Image (cartoon, rainbow, N blue to C red):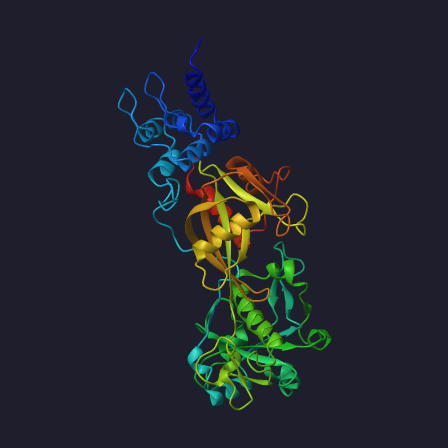
Length: 458
C-alpha cells in the first residue's frame, strides 16, 4: 500500500502540473507542510507549476511560502526551469514577487504620443494674461479670433464644398469682435478667456484674413473664447453659412479636426470651471474673473484665499488614471464595460486619483476595486486632456499579479480577459462579434493600440 503522505505529495505535484489552483489551495489549506516536498527526481511543486507556465499556481505557492531555492537532481531551480521552457511571465514572478520588476514584454524606450485633444497651434502666452492693456487692445483688434460657446457647446461650421469628393470637416467657427461685442458688454453674464496667440502667422489652420491682418500692432493674432447662456446660432448663421452649436458634448466633440481639438479642450475646460466657481469656495462670496480668465479673485476683504496661492483661485484639473491591464503572460488584456456603454463595447478601466496618491497606486487601487485583479508593475504611456469638464487622462499599462475577476457591479457591470487576437480582430479587422472598443480619438483606443504594437510575436 502506498504511503499516504507520498500519495498527497503526488496529488500536490499533479495539481501544480495541471494548474488546478482550486484543488491546490484546498490541499495546502489542510497540509501546508507538504509544499516543499519533492518527487524522486527532486522536483518540487513549484518546479512543476513553473515547467508548465501556470502563473496562478506559481503565485499561490509563493504566497504560501514555498522555497524558491530548491534544486532537483539536475541542479535546476524552478527559475532555471521557467527560463529553459521560455515562460517569461513565470520568470518575472520568480525574480520579484512584489511586482516591481519591469515585465519582459514592456519596451525599454518609447516615443511621446500625441492624442486627440492634445494638439494646438496656439502659444498660450501666459505672460500676457496679467497685461490688462494688451488684452483690452487685442479684444477689439481686427485680427483677433473669437470662438463662442452656448452652455459649453461650441459654435462650429462645415468646411468643404458640397460637390467635393472629400468629407466636409467640422471646424470651430472663427468670429470677430463685431460678432460678439454685444455679449462682451455683459461680463457678469458671460465668461471671456484669453486662449493665446498663433504660434506663427502662417500656420496651416489660419484663414487668409488672419494672415494679412497682422501688419500693425505687435503682429500677434490673439484668440479668445466666450461662453454665453442659451445663445442662438441664428445671428451668426446669417454671416457664417452653415454654423451651429455642436452638441451633445460626447460624442459630438470628437468630430472636430485634430488641429483644433486642443484649442477646444483648453477653452471648454476653463469655461466649465468658470460656470461652476462663481462664488468663492473658501468663504462663499462673489468672485471676479482676472488674469485673462485663468484666475478668480474673491471680492471679500480678508478672505483667506487672498493670501498665498490656492487651487480655489485657479482653474482646476482633475487627474484620472486610465489603464490597460495586461495578463502576466503578456498575451491577454483586461477590459471592462459600464452599463451606459453600447452593447458589446469594452474599454480600459479608469478612475480619479485621490489626494496624497501616486499615479501607480491609483492604478492598482482602481483596478482592484473595480475588477478584483491586483496589479504590480505600472508604466506611464501618454496622457490626454479630456474637457468633460476638465480631466487629465493619464494613460498607463499595468501588469496583473492575479488573474481572477470579481466585478464590483457599481463602477462597471462586466470585465473580461481578451486575447490579443480578439482585440486585433475588433480594432484592425473590424470584427465586432466579440467586442468593440472606443473610437480612435479616445486614449483608451490608443492604449490598446500601443499594447498590440509592442511585440509582434506575443
